[in-house]
Image (cartoon, rainbow, N blue to C red; front, side):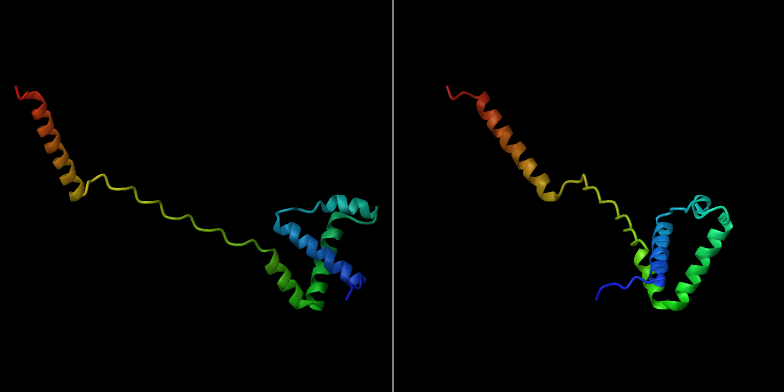
Length: 118
């Protein structure tokens, strides 16, 4: 079903846009808006009208304002993970015995090279 754009729908759209801008830490320049509205409008009148429109919107659509505020909230950030454990510098018993065996074998080969059978 196509959207029926009424003055109420326009007001709701503008309020949702303002809410998203606030969620992004964007401040409205109400003084510039008042200047654009004409000489009879001032900064305070703009702020008051936005608040009035918000209240009217909340009364007319209480569920939609809750959904919109939940949708605009940012997701929670992940907590940093624990640092990885560094590997131990201690050698296991199996590694120690194989290194000792290799040293013994190297010693036998070295001793055998020094003695000529002649």
